[in-house]
Image (tube, rainbow, N blue to C red; front, side, top):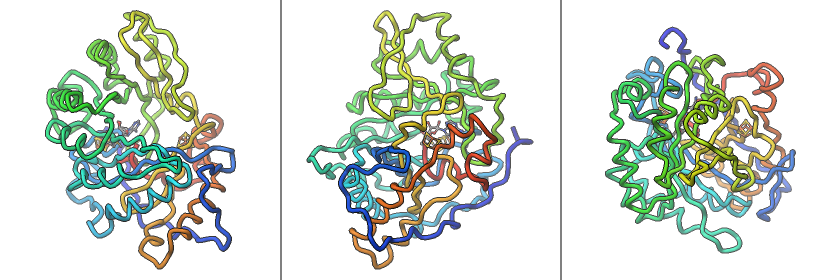
Length: 372
Ligand code: SAM
Ligand code: SF4
Ligand code: SF4
């Protein structure tokens, strides 16, 4: 791995301020981008820090003791995040996911959850409020998270074998502690819980069956994620991607599975059910099967840059608007105009051309910084 890690070229401070148009679009909840896709899902990165060093996300060789994480003053405050989220909700967002870095490392994140849990859609409905975590602090925090208004969690876990998992997280973190976190989340009622497993060929594909056996009949949905070429530091290579089709073949050796229909438009996972009623699994095939066609997701970075695609190489600076003399109507108008002009479809283009050409050239943003 070490020989293929690529040094970080810092893109964080490069973004221009998002222009405020003279005649902005007022929020109607019915925004549509240049390809007819609505805005429904907002992923908010609350910290760029993490206590893991997963090689596919924050390789140790790059994110070492010399790496400068964002200073606190650069982060969006909880008030700023909530103000922006309210504007996004007026434009149609109904699903919020807190992510990072490791979101449970952000101090008092429960307070932010309380503030977000109070928001309502224009129809008066509560938002779908969830969080993705590596599970390391979940045993300690599950109950407080639930009490603050979080509805459910997704926990990342790349294997059940300690040697494999510790190699993946690269800080020697034990499987048992993540499992304890998942149990605590279940006990606190933070369900339905999803578990994300990134499958990297040559690293953890031998964990597919043990993970499936473990989470069957538990009500927890295990999702297998293809190792993606996000960011620019993980030295991604196509030959390390295990296509979802192969995951399905491996599962098929032991289980009978039948395909289910998507639960919602824009759903990233292809759903499969165990024929004997043991629950369901998901396959997220971001590399081998582009799902840009109904991508309704926007991502807000830790210091307030908006990314309209996971593979973008620059974001739009919303913090400059929040900290400038702009009204809610002006910021809302800027968001509406930005989404109206969105035409991102990186995964689709990647299928037909070189990755750098698909993202318009330049270095892509890192996953831990905008969240998954
Ligand atoms: N730290 C939290 C965690 O790991 O759950 C939240 C942030 S993490 C960036 C969000 C998700 O992105 C995780 O499920 C992680 O496995 C996934 N991820 C990170 N890098 C990835 C890559 N190169 N390919 C596929 N998934 C990746
Ligand atoms: Fe941290 Fe999550 Fe990235 Fe792993 S995937 S390094 S846990 S942010
Ligand atoms: Fe959405 Fe970009 Fe991923 Fe396509 S590549 S599904 S547009 S985030």
